[in-house]
Image (cartoon, rainbow, N blue to C red):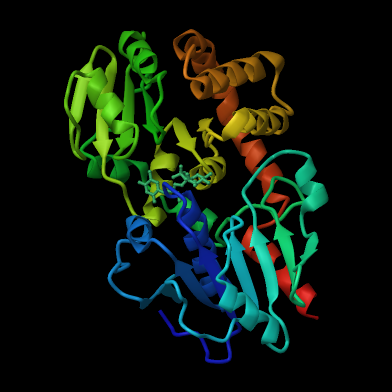
Length: 381
Ligand code: TRH
């Protein structure tokens, strides 16, 4: 990779890994895009390099400073090394920046543009809050809230400039042969299952076993895998393992580098995704998908689920929207998936068609990295 010119603007991006891979997943994707597509010298501060390494195996968790894909990756230590803040400082997902660094931001001339990159939500209030400033209570600094979202009143969604080209170069036959699987038969359903633990897993697998048509379920290693093993009466499952019962075949996959995850979504007829980043990738993949939302206190996540469904179902006929909503809610509630599956299965052709329309709709919001660069440019000028 060509080093960035020394005159490249420097941005600091802070990522606190709360759990799982969504925080670092979004931050790593954004950091790479800012560097590769916008020529920005990004310093990505991460408090859990071991989690980052799962997404980019070249990352060495023992190193305090390293470079990958044009991004300077820094261990987020306490205290942080004394450093001049960049022209833009992004705190991802409301993470608290170190006090000394914030003081240094207040001393910098000109002061950095300070961004709080928020979580993705389809709720209507997002449009009223996107871009709003919030003054620091003590220092001469203002933080701006930057919201990802699904329409032009938000910051849009991350989508790399080369996404369409990468997708066009995808060869399904080659993909399946690397997993030692033939091309799917005409009545077969290939499903990827990236999920949290779920009490509904057993009934889902049971339904597929008994189903009239073959289902091949590809399960990346992770939180749902022990439940799959238990369903088959096994202590554990590992990447490469394959099981078959009735009409269902399970193929366990390794957790791949983030850049390779898209191929799985492109290859499958239906993708189970979760959290934030895989949820967005499933939408770009233009395949039917099932979203398992990250659980929040007081069931706040269920409102977010409904807000997304309300947007996504525009343009779907009533029966398809009903089948989709019933299955997604059952999967998120953890019961009732077996009853909801047949109608959802029948709705898949209509949903496959709708996936393309939806992807075109959300592209209208523009790419988040590009929107963020423009937002910061406007704030600086
Ligand atoms: O891992 P997630 O559940 O992440 C999160 C976190 O829980 C976070 O705290 C929460 O705030 C957020 O969800 C809403 O799901 P997500 O967001 O889909 O992130 C998973 C990442 O892992 C995504 O970047 C895709 C990547 N991935 C790979 O790189 N390789 C793989 O094989 C798979 C299956 C996923």
